Amino acid sequence: MNSLSGNDHAAVSKFRTEGVHEWQAVDGQTDATGIAAALDANTEAILAVAHEQRTANLIALYSCDDWQNKMTISKWDQVAQQIEARLGLNGDMK
Image (tube, rainbow, N blue to C red; front, top):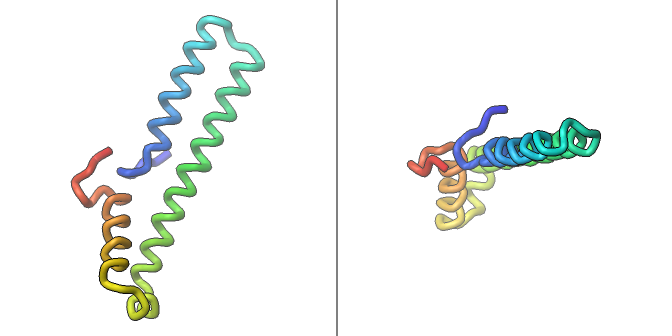
């Protein structure tokens, strides 16, 4: 999974998967540990996709001439800042 800056769901998923692997090391590969790993990976993947969709929606909003005329400058700047943060263009490399 691609993890753009600002979208930490891939990192969270990796961290949780490591926890499940530690659990598996203690208890062995069981139905419970396998299901836990699958559910966690699926949840984080869905959240990551939702994050990327929100980024795409913000870019579409920012590109729309009709909305440019309806938004105040401060709101417009907020949208631009969110896009920059989500794409890692603001120098914040979370």
